[in-house]
Length: 418
Image (cartoon, rainbow, N blue to C red; front, side, top):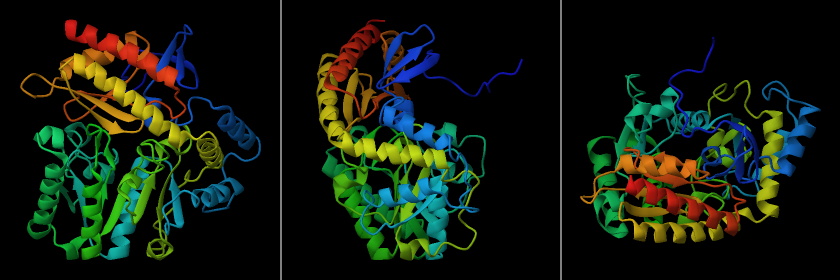
């Protein structure tokens, strides 16, 4: 009998039969509050009527219009619509299917545009599992182990982790930028460096926000040395952090922006955006792909952007994120095993630690499992697997946040007691 690869491991025991809004239902029709959102994908909730209608309508007219062969209206409309939300000046878009593909496309463009080879990435960053994206990833050895040698030209520098370093945010920023400057005189000359790639919030690395001063410092250094700044908004984009883009919190402008996940409410589409001047430096034939910019995915993305705007989901993410964060901190105050609660908007992490400050992955795993048993689906992250993250759909209500907090408190109590 043919079965799925044994390398695929499910985070919860749920066999999903259907989804609606913030809920998933199993084959027995038991509801679960889904605070995973398909790893931040179902931004408008499961099966939002507007997204469903747009996809169904598109399926009946054109499913696949391969976009280097013909052009189709959904992609043109999506591109125009993205122009309303992309940072000023980023007016050229290239579409692919996944975050990893978009990351690799951004690196290809950066190398073509600058004629330089090296890429600076950050310790704890996650950019994907394909070979180039994995070479930029250091959120955990599982992404890189056993497949070396990795793509060359990648150097890593510390991300400001105030909690792990046991210092203030300001001290962490100063230390991380000093290490960055040291990198430029010890490992990669600015003249050899094509780009810096950074997440506004470390995702798989532990849900650690980049302080605004840190992103501003990277922007300054990129400008000073003619290095391109690539901002990976795969998980943070489309309202997730309470701003439309995660980098908006820092008031900076990237040279290349990467978007995916929440862009189409579950349909596979991703993109990179850059200026006309920069995108025109891509070598002929370097951009393409069989399924990129799929018509149905483009229609779903267009509907998603409409829902995000019409239902005020960016504001809702900020408001409900603040409510969720406050509740999580109250739970943490009652349970010292949760050493830190952090994040932006509806992208929040709970870090479990032992009394000596070392990671406590075992208690995190128990809390994660107990939450699923209580009807709350969550995910873990961080290099040690000791961070339990919460990423509900952006349509989540105050009542649903409160219900999730009740279940989380129950789960943590059970985990600590066992």
